[in-house]
Image (tube, rainbow, N blue to C red):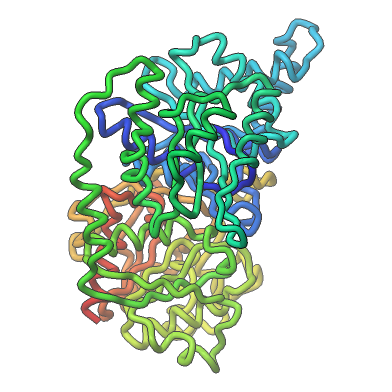
Length: 526
């Protein structure tokens, strides 16, 4: 799947929607993202640059589109599902240094393109999947995308037309001054693809307004595509309506026909339709404050936002998420900023900027009995606040922010102390956690052992464990291998839970994350 005319057309959502429809027809499907930037992975990128960094169970720091893939397919992704130009070149250069190319001149063609093809095939090695959907990031015509387009051209020739379909998502803008939808940008985008050796098999036209048959026919004619292989993707109120729109456009049937695969029995999508019914017909409405420091770009907290959608639907509740900048919260204005909230989530993050606002927020939620969910740094801020104001450790802090604190209640993990490189070196991926049966966490999960995804370097300092326990902040989730504290709760609070892991990564349409579900329940009850 390629994109044309402009970026941010929703290739990730379209890829996830198509894959979900194919999955509903009985095919095993996975999706991978090829990103043209030179970073080895998004782990060292500022969220303002690229939105959220999504983490897989096997510990890969990946593009946020992998979150869409998992939320739609309800199947975990892995290291192989996200590949960047940086990783491609890193692999080729390492091979060259080892002498694997036997003295040959190493070039973009064939060595870089061969590595791209290898990565595309790797995700389904051993025939794990019937269909692999590969999304190429960026826009056709970008210099950095050229090796990927050439690799796809070669791959289509090698696999044969019936084993490889190219879908091109492009924009048909609407000119309000003339009241017309214009197809010329799409024609030029397809021409660009043709110049690079690829004839798209299917066109999906992103549009604000529904397109007439005449416009679709015109696009088909001038882009050399079958008329029934042109689909529209019209604006919708929620991304979760896109699969139903693509079903109406018969996109899945078109792809299967071109792959020579049967497309019998239209999928009923009962669970999906029920999810949308609840989403569009809520019985309750609540306002939740998401307190973070990247709130200017909502994509920085994409998985959290979508987890609220999933858990809100299950609770038949419209969750109004108010993004609140933690740098703007002070002791003087906290009541004014947070007084109208039914619940508070303090978001993950790194570094000192905005941390005092998060600590003040945790105190406000604790003292006013407001449901609280702290994720990663959000848990650490709750621990620091409790230490300062309940345990009277006045300068308690995390050593990430204050190396000279008298009470390092949050400290660097022992195995992190000798690490210099930043990329891919945190505690990453899925780790076990054992739950206390008397906890709110156990009530939510309904089991004593869970596996959740992590992305951090700093942890609760268990030197202070007994003090916290004896004063009402209870460690209710422990990693059995390292004895690290993964979950803390307040004994005398309505619903106050801090987790060191990232539950938002595990929330899907079919299986909303239990912590978010119970957090929303507590907010409704409030």
